[in-house]
Image (tube, rainbow over all chains, first blue to last red; front, top):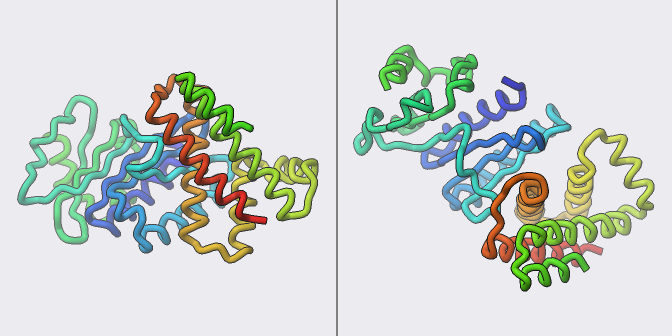
Length: 152
Length: 125
């Protein structure tokens, strides 16, 4: 995995921890060196707290990867991510069964608990999951999650 | 002139090149405004851009955002400008170089975003 993508996955995880209701999508336009990140809902995208974090991520990304570009999108943007490489969605534990997800053919599934102890599905294509993500997901990523993912 | 071109293309239902013109209307205005704001020549701007080792479009944006910050423009205002510019720029790349479907709704919205950016650009002297 390229370093810029690892950087972004780590930042997506931090965003997800900061906003329990956030949905994040990621797509890399490889030929153009553009990394697209979609943030939903719009209320988070416009919030002061999120704006601060976005500027911080952008500044550090520019510093580390001056030849690449990061673009943050919302529901009202011209560009929409239809086939995300990474999708992070909030899921309420009492309303959603992880096994209801039907991604077993194309995706490895990871799950973690957000700051309010709700289950959150983190869905990634196999080649990204195969990268060592254990450090990125920190304490929320456990052996139990792994076997859960494999069962799915 | 590029924005006029975008609107003519829109009226003719030629939607993919609308995006190109809508974007370059902003790019050209931003270039001319930056020359005025920083009191530099186009040659000086181009040389600085080459030295930066960044995409010339991104260098231009970053320099313009810096000029907004120097003018004490509110954080949310310059951030919204930056977000909108990058959104339009990305769609221009997809439209020009990829097999992106551009319909009338998308090209219409691109023109609106271009107009929003141009209003801000023209207000900075």
